[in-house]
Image (cartoon, one colour):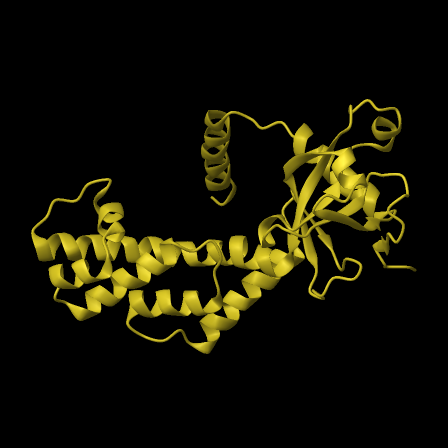
Length: 261
């Protein structure tokens, strides 16, 4: 069975198709790639009026750093925010407010050092300043946050659990993500993630004229069919009212209590 998902596009004169992979040479990691999702019939029959829709594609490494590790770090970040706010308020006899921490972290480091003489507290504040300015995270960030909150190093068991969570989330992607193992002539061998909710538009003329972008490949069947199926599911999914969901949980709790009597 052929597991190769993409084929290379070597002739830019080939007709544009759904599933064509775009490489934006001037953009950063979060917008470097895209995959055309406009239907072939719409392109051929000009129903899209020359405006092509595409989903953003990032490397799997970027997805891990910007989304998965953010989820893993968030509880430690929230814990550190609470601890820092409480400590600074006590130290300065200040009253906490919704903007207190934001204002504190916006101050420059020299000002904060003159204000706060506690070096350990300053280390936590500076860590928060650094963390809150990031859009991508690493396991090193998680280790630093854990140490700041617990005053001890992250042990191997907890580190392995964090790594397993990353692997689990990669193996079980949300419904609005799709995995591509490789893209033609690109250096990353660790895979790519299609973000089905991040839909952008571009002129067909810009694609065919290669204006700061290139068509580098095409997603083949059955992978293209699976991607379009997931795309349709994302935008056809109908949620239920939050009140109904909450009531259902309460009823389910009663059911369980009756069941285990």
